[in-house]
Image (tube, rainbow, N blue to C red):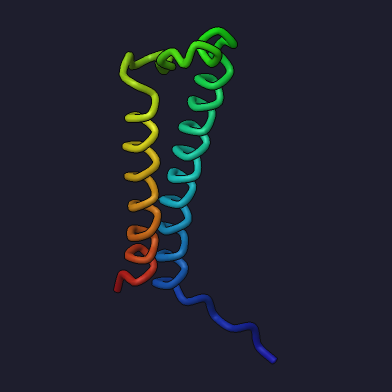
Amino acid sequence: MPAPEPIPDLLKAVNEASGKAFALWITFLTVGNYLAISIGTTTHLQLLLAGPVKPPLCRVGFAGLIIVLLGGFSMFIATVPGEWVNQP
């Protein structure tokens, strides 16, 4: 039985989608590491006194930053990869 010939258009679409997914994965890991650093630098005194926890690079409230980043990232994950796969 002869080997099936690869479908070039399908192969190209899958390779493009995997490249975008890889970039998305790296972004997710970067944000996760940033949050881990932020959590690791929080002191016991800040927690005991319920003081504000500020991320290391941007001096805004931690809760606002978490809501914006995770909410936007979740909406991005829910919509964009499906559009990448369904491209003609």
